View (tube, helix red, strand yellow):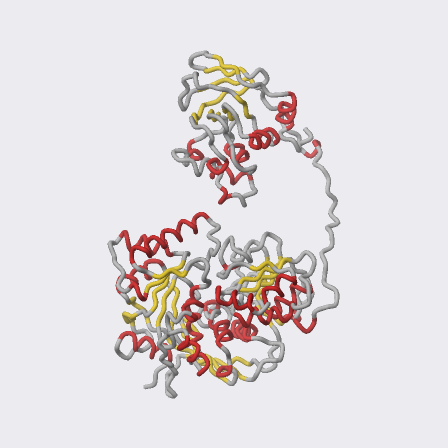
Length: 602
């Protein structure tokens, strides 16, 4: 009986014939952990006393956060780097690009090979006729220690393209047509094999685009049997090449035909990658931003296509165009060939090579109410931000950036769509609507928290990794989150408590959250020997009661009660009756405090 591609690859890596449903211990040629999940792989290895079976086949790829701009990612990356140094493991660091693309470009695995990664789109390797699979941290740790991992051989589906797409369609449109056919689960549990008139002619970048979206159809992987061009590319990269092709009498669990005759450009509407319509049906939709990149459309050919549309044009006023090549090698080629200059002249923001918009906090994310056209592979709510995301080809994305509204390259208007100002009137709240501030007390009694430290800076009070938080109600939980011995303060403090601290409290940055976090927790007063100049203004203007006083001789301990008169500055220790004189509220401070803040009218 003939074999399908996946049956041949897995069989070669277990040393025997396999059939769908067989559970086999599969030898893995390339074992990869990313900055996403990599630190957990290290933890699993350390916690279980495991060693690395073959460091030469083991790799870290840092592609989720190529800027290291998130503190947790930075910590995870450094954990992986240290582990790699100790064990002789290669690291493709934050300057290299997307790991699955590097696996192909650097020859980590070739046609007929096997790769696993903590990347759900590791099945991109199907583009070169290799088996790639995304796995969890424990799977990866096991494979690193043993060189193999169990796998259940999936059933195969033969997918045949009928006809040829229209002149404006791209490989992204073809795979969107597949997604329109299969929906979110039509390939669930299958290994697909693409065949048909267009397949042999598809370039490597086209195959990568199409292979990358097997996950969105529920598939294990979709394969292309490697043509001569792909084989030659992999040989130049230094990979072993075993060009696997299904046997003529291979047995398939299912077959599907996808009619792409005259296929026009397609687009996926927000919320569901499989909610696909023709671009013409969404044409004219105003957009706020456009993203070109990702593992689906970050190759050189994608960059070149976008540049061809942007050359001599400008991004529409008010629209943000973000572009991220998939690897640093592609980035440099774009620089050498003037493509980067085209992007910059058009008004685009270009980021470091990497996953970009698919990773939280990276270039390509959007905000609430923002409408984005993206070349990525997913547009689930919240995946690429809190706005609405359409999925399309680089051609459609670039044309939309110029037009300011969804369009195709052949229909870019002479004048871009522009944003119209909101006609909703802006008015101040009135006291009759219940916005008046209740009369605020000028004497405060509360339980003391003694933070007996000088120079407590704003990063210690409220770390910069939380600066995107704008809701005061959410800020309290992060108070003192970067101050040793005080990280549990939010869970211990009670409304009405008083913080007593040392000199220069709140030095450092101008972040308002370092003040507002105390309001969030209901802290009644902050007393310090002195305050950072900006912090003092921020607190006064926010109506947060602060007072300058030296209570070092008061013999205070956590939990003691004190009375504070904001008008006179007199601080009384309730248990002993001792009095200390602090700085009373100035007329300006008292007025702002009484109104509940500088911007309140009272």
